[in-house]
Image (cartoon, rainbow, N blue to C red; front, top):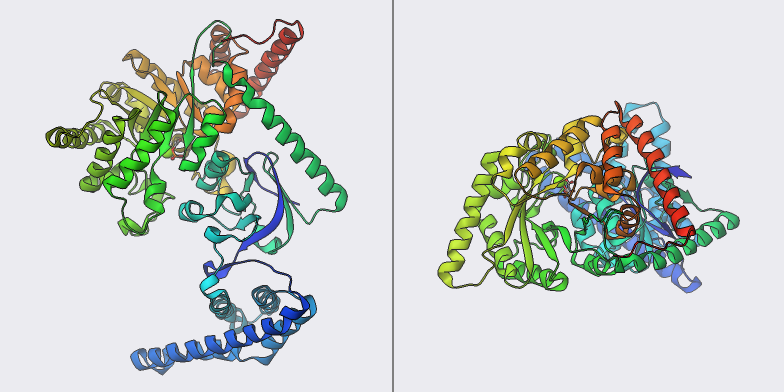
Amino acid sequence: MLKGIPASPGIAIGKAFTHNQGDVWFNWRHLSEAEVEPEVDRFLEALQEVGVDVERVRRQVEARLGKEHAQIFDAHLLMLRDPMLADATVSMIRKDRTNAEYAFYQTLREVKHQFDAIEDEYYRARVSDLLDVESRVLAKLCGEDRASLANLDMEAVVVAHTLTPSDTAHMSRDRVLGFVTEAGGSTSHVAIIARGLGIPAVVGVETATTRIEPGDLVVVDGTRGVVHINPDAEALAQYRAEAERLKQLERTLPTLTEFLAETTDGVRVELAANVDLPEEVEMVLRYGAEGIGLYRTEFLYLTRPALPTEEEQAEAYRWIAERVAPQPVVIRTLDLGGDKLSHVFHAQPEMNPFLGWRAIRVCLAHRDIFRTQLRAILRASACGNVRIMFPMISGLEEVVEAKQVLEEARSELRAQGIPFDEECQVGVMIEVPSAAMVADQIAEEVQFFSIGTNDLVQYAVAVDRSNERVAYLFDALHPGVLRLIKGTIEAGHHRGIPVGMCGEMCGEPLSAILLLGLGLNSFSMSPSAIPEIKRMIRSISLSDARSIASEAMSCKTPAQVRAYLQRALQGILQDAEADEAGERGPHAG
Ligand code: PEP
Ligand code: MG
């Protein structure tokens, strides 16, 4: 049983597909009797071929850099030709009838353990040679059919140290049952994607890739943040029953779609959904979202070898705008950088990527690319209710500059006679503390705000959102964060513009009561979170939510805020149940 951070609720049960050394993914496979000897031959041939490759590299290095540098490859060749290594792998293929990748991986693990245990620098240093040999042989064995998340050939739970946005952008989603990663917090990329697709996930599981073997049966309990490896029959039956119960519950939740998100004293708020991948739009419609409050456009840039053209982008944006019309879709301009680095910008690795060249900073440095995206969004605005949103704004100048580029795009389209919505609204994300502090100035320039707490918390509390070691500090209920949120909402309202939120915070019932009470106008979240938030909003009056918010704002620590909100939420739900029992029925919209 491994503990981690709950990242996406639900229970997934399946075989593990693990990430291995050198970016080679492979599956465990059981062989039939007839497959065993051909598998042994395949393995011995791969060893031989890797030996030839290494010899060649050795000769090239010797010619270019001299004998001394080439010696490193002698160690690799010795290992490749070590009969013990080959024999141990072959006998495992024969005895356990497993595929060569798995047998070789297991054999090397054993050797690595032995090397690690020897108190001798020389042997310890050989571990990196072993890793090198391992990834070469595995890559050769996997060859052209190298497994990847893009061509998973069975349903599986993906277990990895970390998953990059391009891993998830390419994966075959219908085969992924669950995610377990060693790195990451609840707002890291994989957590957001998992929630968006409704796939259970646990992140920050420190020893996942060493404790879970390929092919192990694992249960991912994304609600409790627990991963159970090879559970016994009784535990497995319990998990299966629980998974079935959750599925039943899920089927009943969307029935709330016919009701509006309205408080008991008749105040309407907007409940919208966040979308990272076009596939999620189906969930958005099913869960009754009132449009898309955040459409992350990064996937378009991460799934292609080169930049997407204006036409490709316009087509993608038009598709989504038409699917949700007449409801709005807020298209956020490119937010690459941070944990989403892209090959297309050839960005240099940075010491602090989240504080570095990211989002609007990249766009303002590449105005041609930015203008192309803005033209594409504007073109889509002719076919639906499209809004434009700029991410990572830190102050007024960036808004003014971004609007200048937008104006250039508009003038070009006008001159070319290409239709677009002249009234298309423009807003910004408030996710950098400095922007929250000057929200009154920024409000003069835009038509809406959307608070991005995933980053606002990261920057305000100085806690890397993808670092599991400091995840305990990542808390949107920190009084300092709450003051920034309150100030932003007040600044927006003072200027007469609506203020929404698209950070993960607003999809949690506890925080949602508080945000409602602070006057937030729209909530955008993972589609699957909508029914529960809607139920909560329909159970409370705005005036009660206001008093709760005011009391919560006087608490001194995140723990006090949480404890207070928990008591308040319990009270609300009990009252709502009593009302229902009194057969007053749901408050119709
Ligand atoms: C946020 O920062 O809260 C947000 C919604 O944007 P992202 O998670 O894409 O950074
Ligand atoms: Mg953000």
